[in-house]
Length: 615
Image 1 (cartoon, rainbow, N blue to C red):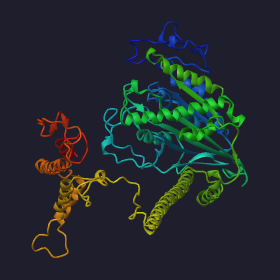
Image 2: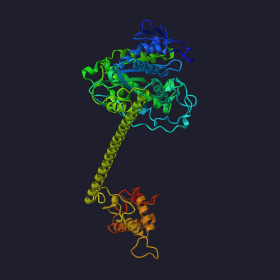
Image 3: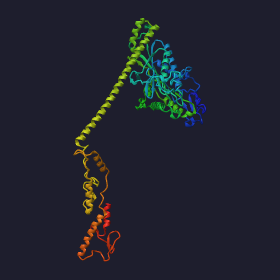
Image 4: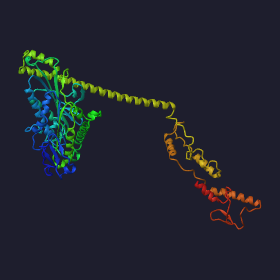
């Protein structure tokens, strides 16, 4: 595409040779420093070419093959703002590939002789990996802030349309399913189809669908497509006997059924360049994910993975699943890769061109699709149409009024089939949801049952309420010790005053009497809570006897000891005359300390009392 106003300042970075179908980066440009590879392709179009030139060299031959019973696919690939939507839809002055293909199909039908044609169309959108039927009344764009002018949507030729997206009801995602059978191939079940008889009717339906497509504004594109769209035309034809004026040669005549897919892909994008955030970032992530899987499928096909029996991830995204026949299958496919020559997007252009070179190596195996069974719509409606012809105009009735009545009957029958298909999908989805809900409920019930059984078993064994007490747990002294004597003093000889004080402390810890007026045998809750709190908090050791009491006790014992020494005629071991009184309250004779009250040599009474107090 040509450079836009934002890109003209930096200029182009590519040399385009449309005569030799080659494109190469300019020497010294940003594209050349990234990769200097020259790309040789089937067709290369410079910015001066018109959309009709692209159509004539890429799509016109596929349209002729579709009328002969071959499947055909054309899709545009490239980064965001590279011109894909303009290539596929065009403008009022320059129609794109889709309008040109529609006109070409009906012009070829008008020129055909000896065959009867039936054309039906559908329009599918893949938005955030959700399929939306753009022909359905439920596929109305959700109310969002205006992205283009005041509407947030556009018409078939890319122009903004009014109508105020704020007044539109919220979109309900259609319940569509991708299915596959041996005769129809891969198709979207529940997708609404319209029988069409003229290009004007098709273009009017296209305008309705395009207006419902998701578009948004980014830093790179004011009208960026936020979804992939697939416009599908199914062309059925059969040979007729000219002598019978429209009657079939026989009930077993083969019907040619060809499918034409015209795909407008959303462009890959980088958040750094688009400035997307919030819902725009989520849309971009889903777009990049589906395009990444498309690239993986193309790589697998070019490596010959299908012939080697390797897995090809068609089912990893809805886009590749629907386009599976067009990628290495039963279809004639053309890929239009759109690039910008701007130097600012040199890396993205390299990526798109590498994709184009890989896609060239994919080999398809297109065959004519002949249907003999009732899977062809023209075959299913044959009996009703013949009866209507006879009723309206006899054997030779081919007037305009008869054809209009026949087309109306066909639309009515097709709508009935579509409705049955949608109802079947609804029932299938409801059944699957009900099975999932029942499975989840069953899992919850099983889990609760296991919990109840475990709880009952634990209650029966007494494991919850009666836990065994540890026999080797160390017991330490605390204020609620009713023995009165701490553990570290048990079994030792204590002074009389110490043991007495401990006994008194136990007596002081006796529970308080119940307040007056309280019934006998009941415990005051406040007192019980206070006692529990004191037991939880802990306490201190009981106070030892007073120092005066200990000194009096020790003095009495000393006098008794001295009296016994005098009666034996001895002054004690290690004592000398000239006794003097010590400054620390202990009596020393000749500098030797007096015996202690407990008979321990070298320990004074005051020291012993201080040790007891510390304990």
